[in-house]
Image (tube, rainbow, N blue to C red; front, side, top):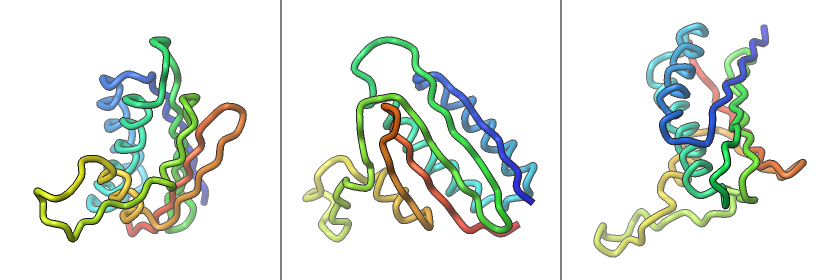
Length: 139
């Protein structure tokens, strides 16, 4: 059975609480185990916070749409925003083997998303960033 849900938030950091609550409700509804819920929330929050923080050149209100879909034992998540073009898959992973004091700042959130999710793809269509993420889940 396929179940879909769309979450629409504004490009404001205060909206992250709404996003977290709705993601939690979706996971509860689908009996997704807590550790998978944690991974899903971390990945979605990282992508959305980056879009809100860095994605817009104006002060206008914009919608960010998070589309959730479960298919068998997989969750598919699509994050769409109309911010500046940005493909997170092109961000080079930080060297996590360096000493802490020798590491450069930035890039760790996207690095975690790449490692948490099973599949990621990006495209730019109709002036929107569209990031698709999938993760195999257990219930």
